[in-house]
Amino acid sequence: MDIEKNKMTNEEIEQNRQEHIKLYQGVYARDVDDNGMSLENYGATNHGSSLASVLAKQDPKSIADIGCGKLQFLLQMKNLCEEGILIGIDPYFECDCSNNSLRHVLKAYKGIAQNLPLETDSVEWLTCFDVLEHIPEFDMGTVFKEFQRVATKGLLMSISTRDSVLRINGKSLHATVKSRVWWMEKIFCEWLTGDSIETFLLEDKETYFNIGIYL
Image (cartoon, rainbow, N blue to C red; front, side, top):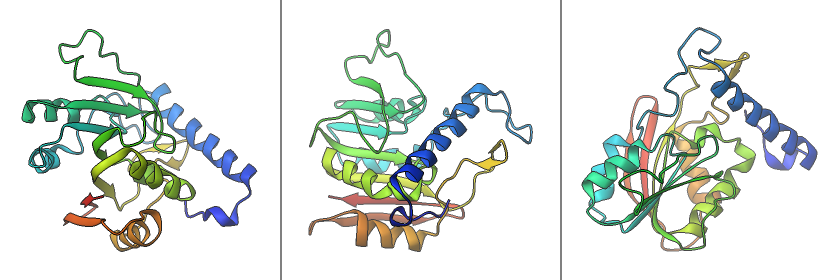
């Protein structure tokens, strides 16, 4: 959805957000999408699996995974890192870790990227895999401000550059479908601030790209 924030009224922005929420509520209320594709395991895919070893080399002491789904990436990280606090944040899952053997290091909260339920400078690394394309463009500046507010060392992300395969009531689940060039320009020229920002990873794939950023 190619909508610039400065071309919308506050009322229109809020209406768009609510429509987006209803779209995702439709995902979790249904067994299949419009085309009959199963939604049973939606949120269970570990989109960051190939980047776990990259992050492990940074020796992270704390990680917050935004849009964590069913915590698969964090569970993978726990196997790679002997120490560290792992935090999952997702607007649609409330994961109960109270009976988990990892409950002393693995925490999960309901929350959104636009308003993270975390204190300033509270984690070293923030990860976000196959999530940003689901967020409306007009909220992206707020999202990256939150990322920079919370993380002290860096960001590790994968971003899809294609439209969503799934359809709910005729609508795509990807709100922001843009090229890697567009994303890079926005991230480094508009959304992130500071002189110490540096890219340490950039991998182009056919339908997405991976990027690691030191803050």
